[in-house]
Image 1 (cartoon, helix red, strand yellow):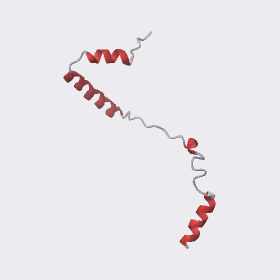
Image 2: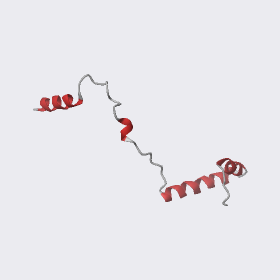
Image 3: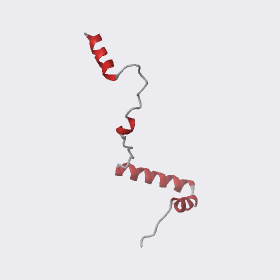
Amino acid sequence: MPRTITIEAVEKEIEQLTPGEQLKLIEKLAHRLSKAGSVIKKKLDWKQLYGLGKGLWNEDAQEYVNRLREERT
Protein backbone atom coordinates (compact mmCIF):
# COMPACT_ATOMS: atom_id res chain seq x y z
CA MET A 1 0.00 0.00 0.00
CA PRO A 2 1.45 3.41 -0.97
CA ARG A 3 2.36 5.80 1.82
CA THR A 4 0.13 8.87 2.07
CA ILE A 5 1.86 12.19 2.73
CA THR A 6 -0.20 14.99 4.24
CA ILE A 7 0.27 18.70 3.68
CA GLU A 8 0.90 19.08 7.40
CA ALA A 9 3.78 16.59 7.26
CA VAL A 10 5.31 18.41 4.30
CA GLU A 11 4.97 21.75 6.11
CA LYS A 12 6.81 20.36 9.14
CA GLU A 13 9.64 19.22 6.87
CA ILE A 14 9.78 22.59 5.13
CA GLU A 15 10.05 24.39 8.48
CA GLN A 16 13.36 22.58 9.02
CA LEU A 17 14.84 24.13 5.85
CA THR A 18 16.76 27.39 5.83
CA PRO A 19 15.05 30.42 4.29
CA GLY A 20 17.31 30.04 1.24
CA GLU A 21 16.34 26.39 0.84
CA GLN A 22 12.67 27.28 1.24
CA LEU A 23 13.01 29.90 -1.49
CA LYS A 24 14.72 27.39 -3.77
CA LEU A 25 11.87 24.93 -3.11
CA ILE A 26 9.31 27.59 -4.02
CA GLU A 27 11.17 28.30 -7.25
CA LYS A 28 11.26 24.62 -8.13
CA LEU A 29 7.55 24.20 -7.40
CA ALA A 30 6.64 27.29 -9.41
CA HIS A 31 8.74 26.07 -12.33
CA ARG A 32 7.18 22.61 -12.16
CA LEU A 33 3.65 24.01 -12.09
CA SER A 34 4.22 26.43 -14.96
CA LYS A 35 5.94 23.72 -17.00
CA ALA A 36 3.07 21.32 -16.43
CA GLY A 37 0.56 24.02 -17.34
CA SER A 38 -1.36 23.18 -14.22
CA VAL A 39 -2.95 26.56 -13.75
CA ILE A 40 -6.27 25.74 -12.20
CA LYS A 41 -9.14 27.11 -14.22
CA LYS A 42 -12.45 27.11 -12.52
CA LYS A 43 -15.24 26.02 -14.82
CA LEU A 44 -18.22 28.28 -14.84
CA ASP A 45 -21.55 26.54 -14.65
CA TRP A 46 -23.80 28.80 -16.70
CA LYS A 47 -26.86 27.04 -15.34
CA GLN A 48 -26.16 28.57 -11.92
CA LEU A 49 -26.48 32.04 -13.44
CA TYR A 50 -29.97 31.37 -14.77
CA GLY A 51 -32.47 33.84 -13.35
CA LEU A 52 -29.97 36.00 -11.47
CA GLY A 53 -31.03 39.13 -13.33
CA LYS A 54 -34.72 38.54 -12.82
CA GLY A 55 -36.34 41.55 -11.28
CA LEU A 56 -33.49 43.94 -12.10
CA TRP A 57 -35.33 45.39 -15.04
CA ASN A 58 -38.92 46.49 -15.17
CA GLU A 59 -39.52 45.02 -18.60
CA ASP A 60 -39.34 41.69 -20.33
CA ALA A 61 -35.97 40.87 -21.89
CA GLN A 62 -37.44 40.33 -25.35
CA GLU A 63 -39.36 43.60 -25.14
CA TYR A 64 -36.11 45.34 -24.16
CA VAL A 65 -34.27 43.89 -27.18
CA ASN A 66 -37.15 44.84 -29.49
CA ARG A 67 -37.14 48.39 -28.13
CA LEU A 68 -33.38 48.73 -28.69
CA ARG A 69 -33.73 47.50 -32.24
CA GLU A 70 -36.52 50.00 -32.92
CA GLU A 71 -34.42 52.85 -31.52
CA ARG A 72 -31.60 52.07 -33.95
CA THR A 73 -33.81 52.51 -37.01
